Image (cartoon, rainbow, N blue to C red; front, side):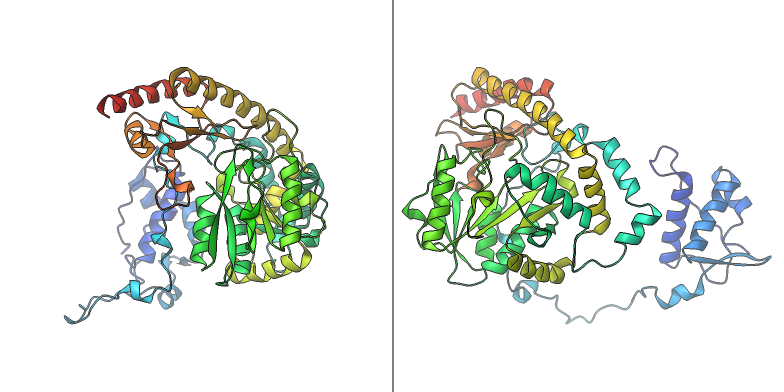
Length: 493
């Protein structure tokens, strides 16, 4: 007698009815809810029970057959594949002894990364009507049609034969070619394929560089202050000494504060978080200083494409005569943060070590994603996207700055040449953490700036307002509402 299964289908769900049937039957089989010696309902019976076409059920059963979750016996029907019993997880019902104690995991961990305070973004920011959040993009900006085309072509039969093998010792040749010939020349960088390594975003690049350079206790890492909080925590997590380096309205100060540094992490195109651009003369001075004092430079060249007032400055790497600059580029900042794709440009000897380290971490970034991105670059879609984003960000930035000047005249805006955010200094009495909490109640997402500072006693009257995830029509309304929240806090202060 066939087992009677009660499946719940949702006609309004994104998944097809066939997919829902497959998912629910697979789960029942995995949990052991379907006995081996009892047949599944016939396709006719299950179709009538669910109110769907018989073909829908037959196709679902065929998928389960293809996945070897079920087998068929002539004239008897469909049964669970008995071979699954060998791999099915067995549950234990017996109780633990009364004297058994839970594991004290804190004593087992060599370090606790969760103890580090990081910049946290509200999980509901996409539902907020006024998301002045940095590092995210509105879904409407994603090049859906072009990316879908490239992703589809990357899974053709011919393409799969090229990327389905393990690529631990090399990256996608077309992607390397596109980075070398299309992206890097715009930054003034001439490099060979042997000088480029693909990463799972810029953060992955930083972690590998840190593993390679910062694991020694005598290492001193110079970090901009204020600066990128995750890099500071990464260096400290790896046991290196960190040295805060002062910045001004033009970026990193190149002076004696750089003494004793083993390496210096710098964000010259748009200083994180102030967004200012390091001038050409300081770039030259920094390179000369690095040569004289024998320290390495880690150049995070994010958002170099978005300079709205002057031509972009050439990358430090392009001006580097001795090969002491390790360059980090990111495609996540322009295509989509969720794609997680970046690259490192350095001397071949450095790339060789990083590739060996990458092998131990994740072997290599997904090869199908590499090919999709390579096609996206080679067909000119990335160039078209940059042109579109440039115009959109330029307009949004202008609207945001005008709105701040109109509605929050007490707040000082850091002058800069571009980027996708503005750095704002509020009156000193204001704690922007309090402002952020109150603003969140009104659907306004802002980011307090205290995490970017290295000192124990951090200034709390700074904030960063991003404009890559908020539509033009919402910017001024959001700032006007933020001004009302600020006024309410002022009255209580």
